[in-house]
Image (cartoon, rainbow, N blue to C red; front, side, top):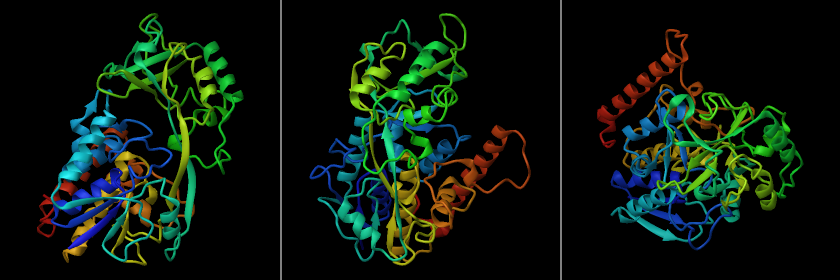
Length: 436
């Protein structure tokens, strides 16, 4: 039995791993290093391009619960992330290079996986998973668009700048996590006057042209900072620049606003500006972001960039196994399905990989139910929706508890317990003997 996976991002690698671990011979097709998308630069698999953070690790937040479900399901991506993590308070962040290198090595050394370098431009007739991501090549995108019952959508995604640690003015920057959760973040505090000057500079800064972009096609979770500023003076101060839970140790007061920096690697030689995705021209990024206290002489190791992000109109086209309804045996996984985020992409790859493996072995599909994040995301991509948009993991995707719990943290903890019990039951079910 043989299967093909197209794309070696997080979703494709996870899907290939799940198939291979279940005894399926897998051909993994990846166009790097033969060809790169505008956002990718490294030859390795599972390259992280927008952030090194996989977000919160507590099971009482959506991404954290999803990560724990993936750990319980023997996810390759989570195993490699845990092994290459860097300090980030209550979040799971990784050393990008080490993470990609470990995933690549695991995939290439698996006896059931054969890696083929080249661009795929057709969709196989059966036993295949398309996990080409938000920057699918034009040739394959045309093949996807020709599938019956499908319309494709596009919006635009932006990445934050990275600065060198040694170029920061540490007399102005302080280390502190929100509400005393460690000291893994650097904080650049702003007075109201400094914030207003920065706000005005963002409003007037020159932006790079991105074909077809009019400011409305940006997913809320990855919005350029200048688009956020244009929505109102205090939008940033209540968003990525919120000072809540932070105290400047020099005066003991909460700043008016804060720009947080998060380490890009274990050595903490590089930091990204948290929430500062942007499409400003590079010279403008240097000018405007150097107004941030502590970044006056910052060395920008990477400027922010903006790129196309294409995803399917999945409801009615994919089922809860991420399978194409009109072409059984063909699956999609990753951000192209309308899940948003690294962990969510890996989760879709896990579900698609398990589903295809079980189909090829004559086993019934797995129902992750609406009690788990895996099942909630699967429902999101498969149910009819008037205005289908990308979705992160969140507790709104889960079925409510039978009894009402007013305290949110207690409610989420109970829902997380229920979810992990379902995962354990699925793992121990005789029909799911190949989970372990």
